[in-house]
Image (tube, rainbow, N blue to C red; front, side):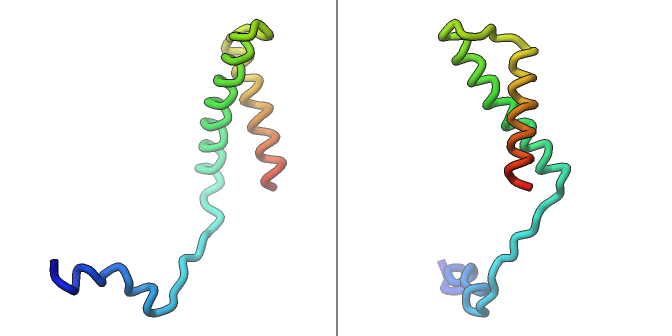
Length: 77
C-alpha cells in the first residue's frame, strides 16, 4: 500500500469538518418505523401466544404494530 491510500480517510479530520446529521425524509422514517414495529409486534404476539395469553393472528400483530407505531411517533415528535 502506498502512503496516499493509507491517509485517504483523514482528509475530513485534518480540515476539522464534521458530519452534519439531517432529519431525513419523513416517508422513509415512517416506513422504517412501520416495518420495525411490525417485526417487534410479531415477536411480542408470538411470545404471548407461546404463553397462551393471546392468539397469534394477523389482526393481533397488525393491532400491536399500529399501537407501537403510534407510540413511537408520539415519543419522537
